[in-house]
Length: 156
Image (cartoon, rainbow, N blue to C red; front, side):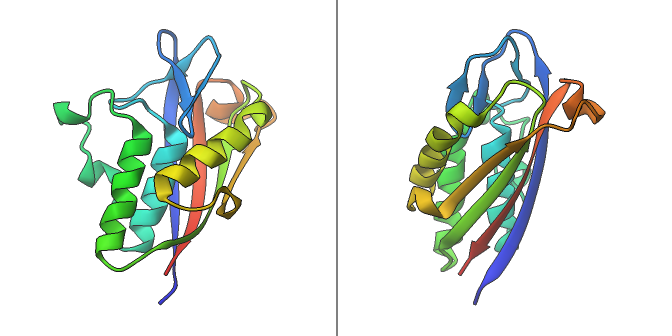
Protein backbone atom coordinates (compact mmCIF):
# COMPACT_ATOMS: atom_id res chain seq x y z
CA UNK A 1 0.00 0.00 0.00
CA UNK A 2 1.32 3.44 -0.93
CA UNK A 3 0.49 6.36 1.35
CA UNK A 4 1.26 10.06 1.18
CA UNK A 5 1.77 12.48 4.05
CA UNK A 6 2.07 16.24 4.44
CA UNK A 7 3.88 17.97 7.28
CA UNK A 8 4.10 21.63 8.24
CA UNK A 9 6.05 23.28 11.00
CA UNK A 10 7.09 26.79 11.96
CA UNK A 11 9.44 28.21 14.57
CA UNK A 12 10.22 31.76 15.62
CA UNK A 13 13.69 33.20 14.98
CA UNK A 14 15.35 34.56 18.13
CA UNK A 15 18.77 35.74 19.24
CA UNK A 16 20.91 33.45 21.35
CA UNK A 17 20.03 30.18 19.58
CA UNK A 18 21.76 28.18 16.86
CA UNK A 19 20.07 27.93 13.48
CA UNK A 20 19.85 24.24 12.66
CA UNK A 21 18.07 23.11 9.51
CA UNK A 22 18.16 19.55 8.22
CA UNK A 23 20.81 18.78 10.80
CA UNK A 24 23.11 21.54 9.53
CA UNK A 25 24.33 24.31 11.83
CA UNK A 26 23.97 27.42 9.65
CA UNK A 27 25.91 30.57 10.55
CA UNK A 28 23.34 33.30 11.28
CA UNK A 29 22.72 35.90 13.97
CA UNK A 30 19.48 34.18 15.04
CA UNK A 31 18.28 30.66 15.63
CA UNK A 32 14.98 28.89 15.97
CA UNK A 33 13.14 28.84 19.27
CA UNK A 34 11.94 25.46 20.48
CA UNK A 35 12.13 22.80 23.18
CA UNK A 36 14.43 20.62 21.08
CA UNK A 37 17.07 21.99 18.71
CA UNK A 38 14.04 23.43 16.82
CA UNK A 39 15.06 21.95 13.45
CA UNK A 40 11.87 22.97 11.67
CA UNK A 41 12.85 21.00 8.55
CA UNK A 42 13.31 17.72 10.40
CA UNK A 43 10.08 18.38 12.31
CA UNK A 44 7.98 18.93 9.17
CA UNK A 45 9.40 15.76 7.60
CA UNK A 46 8.68 13.80 10.78
CA UNK A 47 5.09 15.03 10.75
CA UNK A 48 4.71 14.12 7.06
CA UNK A 49 5.93 10.58 7.75
CA UNK A 50 3.73 10.16 10.80
CA UNK A 51 0.76 11.57 8.90
CA UNK A 52 1.27 9.13 6.04
CA UNK A 53 1.23 6.26 8.54
CA UNK A 54 -1.74 7.79 10.45
CA UNK A 55 0.38 7.89 13.61
CA UNK A 56 -0.44 11.39 14.89
CA UNK A 57 2.42 13.92 15.01
CA UNK A 58 5.80 14.57 16.62
CA UNK A 59 4.21 16.52 19.47
CA UNK A 60 2.40 13.33 20.52
CA UNK A 61 5.59 11.24 20.36
CA UNK A 62 8.03 13.82 21.71
CA UNK A 63 6.04 16.32 23.85
CA UNK A 64 7.54 19.76 24.39
CA UNK A 65 6.80 19.53 28.11
CA UNK A 66 8.93 16.39 28.54
CA UNK A 67 12.41 17.27 29.86
CA UNK A 68 13.81 14.21 28.06
CA UNK A 69 13.48 16.07 24.76
CA UNK A 70 14.89 19.42 25.86
CA UNK A 71 17.61 20.34 23.38
CA UNK A 72 17.07 17.04 21.53
CA UNK A 73 18.75 16.45 18.19
CA UNK A 74 15.84 16.48 15.74
CA UNK A 75 17.64 14.14 13.33
CA UNK A 76 17.63 11.52 16.09
CA UNK A 77 13.91 12.15 16.57
CA UNK A 78 13.42 11.75 12.79
CA UNK A 79 15.31 8.45 12.87
CA UNK A 80 13.01 7.31 15.68
CA UNK A 81 9.96 8.26 13.59
CA UNK A 82 11.33 6.20 10.68
CA UNK A 83 11.89 3.26 13.06
CA UNK A 84 8.35 3.53 14.42
CA UNK A 85 6.70 3.61 11.00
CA UNK A 86 9.00 0.69 10.11
CA UNK A 87 7.51 -1.27 13.00
CA UNK A 88 4.16 -0.89 11.23
CA UNK A 89 5.66 -2.30 8.04
CA UNK A 90 6.25 0.97 6.18
CA UNK A 91 9.37 2.25 4.50
CA UNK A 92 10.07 5.73 3.16
CA UNK A 93 9.96 6.04 -0.63
CA UNK A 94 10.83 9.72 -1.00
CA UNK A 95 10.71 13.11 0.72
CA UNK A 96 10.14 16.57 -0.75
CA UNK A 97 10.43 19.64 1.48
CA UNK A 98 10.28 23.39 0.96
CA UNK A 99 11.81 25.80 3.47
CA UNK A 100 10.22 29.28 3.60
CA UNK A 101 12.83 31.75 4.85
CA UNK A 102 13.70 35.27 3.81
CA UNK A 103 17.17 34.96 5.32
CA UNK A 104 19.73 33.46 5.46
CA UNK A 105 20.37 32.19 1.95
CA UNK A 106 20.20 28.40 2.20
CA UNK A 107 21.44 27.22 -1.22
CA UNK A 108 25.01 26.56 0.03
CA UNK A 109 23.69 24.13 2.68
CA UNK A 110 20.99 22.22 0.78
CA UNK A 111 23.11 19.27 -0.39
CA UNK A 112 24.41 18.69 3.15
CA UNK A 113 20.85 18.91 4.51
CA UNK A 114 19.73 16.29 1.98
CA UNK A 115 22.58 13.96 2.96
CA UNK A 116 21.94 14.29 6.70
CA UNK A 117 18.18 13.88 6.39
CA UNK A 118 18.66 10.85 4.13
CA UNK A 119 21.10 9.29 6.61
CA UNK A 120 18.60 9.78 9.46
CA UNK A 121 15.93 8.08 7.33
CA UNK A 122 18.21 5.26 6.15
CA UNK A 123 17.81 6.14 2.50
CA UNK A 124 19.74 7.53 -0.46
CA UNK A 125 20.08 11.33 -0.65
CA UNK A 126 18.77 11.15 -4.24
CA UNK A 127 15.37 10.38 -2.72
CA UNK A 128 15.33 13.51 -0.55
CA UNK A 129 14.53 16.90 -2.05
CA UNK A 130 15.01 20.13 -0.13
CA UNK A 131 14.16 23.47 -1.68
CA UNK A 132 14.25 26.97 -0.22
CA UNK A 133 12.25 30.02 -1.15
CA UNK A 134 11.73 33.50 0.17
CA UNK A 135 8.30 35.06 0.55
CA UNK A 136 9.28 38.34 -1.08
CA UNK A 137 9.14 40.14 2.26
CA UNK A 138 5.56 39.05 2.99
CA UNK A 139 4.24 37.54 6.21
CA UNK A 140 6.19 36.37 9.26
CA UNK A 141 8.72 34.44 7.18
CA UNK A 142 9.21 37.36 4.80
CA UNK A 143 9.79 39.78 7.67
CA UNK A 144 12.38 37.44 9.22
CA UNK A 145 10.31 36.60 12.30
CA UNK A 146 10.41 32.86 11.67
CA UNK A 147 11.00 29.98 9.32
CA UNK A 148 8.35 27.57 8.06
CA UNK A 149 8.58 24.27 6.20
CA UNK A 150 6.15 22.20 4.13
CA UNK A 151 7.09 18.55 3.57
CA UNK A 152 5.48 15.77 1.59
CA UNK A 153 6.53 12.14 1.69
CA UNK A 154 5.55 8.85 0.19
CA UNK A 155 5.70 5.62 2.19
CA UNK A 156 4.91 2.05 1.21
